[in-house]
Image 1 (cartoon, one colour):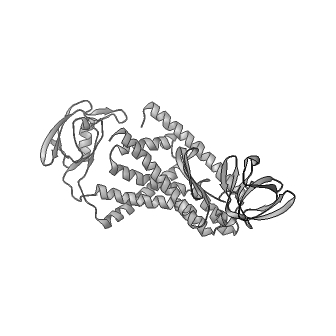
Image 2: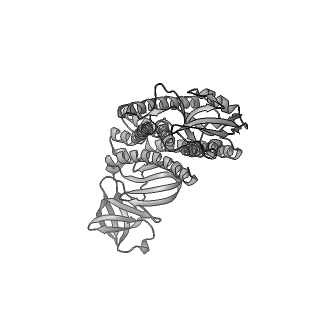
Image 3: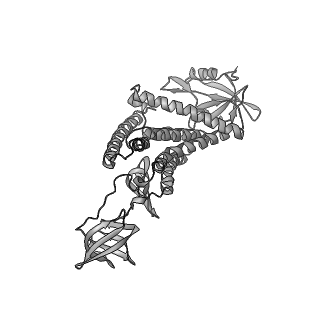
Length: 426
């Protein structure tokens, strides 16, 4: 597979997994009537930004996730205060725009000093214009304009906090839920592409042929039947094949295969793999398969979800009890490196890996760690028990501290990933 194609597929895996997660938040927030200010992929400085309707869609520099910014999820900043001189633009008797700076440059506006303003409940503005007190209604989609930025006001009924516990919980849990749905669909697609292993196989096949390795240079192909090595029949003895190749680093081997019913032999010299100290030719073995039936496709996808979920949770358990080293953790760099390696093996293996990443992202986001979806669900649960919400400022501070800690951890593992790449480790 060409390098450009590998890079494209690697980027697409991350883009699809993060986008489907954020789309879950976005869809159920909009369905509940919440104003969604921004739908972002990535963090940090904006690379691309476009506004459609009420929402700004952005692509940001750091590809370490994304976010959907809902009005009222964090405390709203009320930028207009009594005594402040502003300019407003009217459509009939309704205020559609508030201008908070550069007032002399605004045309077709009304200037005055704010006496009272309520842009959350009553949607009313009383302003002193040339010594006369005037009251205006405010359009529920009016814009606040300052420092070149437009911010749509959020009446209380458009804010996250005004919605029922169920609506808020659904808007939060929908992100991980969509990752689980995507993982299931991708696992099902994988079994449709890879098939199901035969119950009583009598031979091994060459699965993947890694580019640039001895097997690829000798023109072995995926799907070839592995018949023999140096005249010794292999049958279905995978361990025998690995052992014979592993002991022959730098020593030529004759590998016999059957292709399209015709026996062929290839002279191949295994390369020494520094990490294992054994010879490698750059192939994976696979058992013969049959097409998966529709019903068993769903069954197998469900089993894969269960198995991988148990494995991921066990990994988190080891992390919590401290049974890990920094090298066991991987950040975006290491994940991208592994994804690109799997992309080289073909779309089938990449589909399985993408399913695993989507499942991992869904589970990880449900952990009760500040700034993650699990933490926000925890605060909603506390509100249900207490009968009243936690102070929004305190909740925001918890999430801010949690986000900062996550970013520090991300920097640490990314730095470690880069050192590993420099040292040539995998």
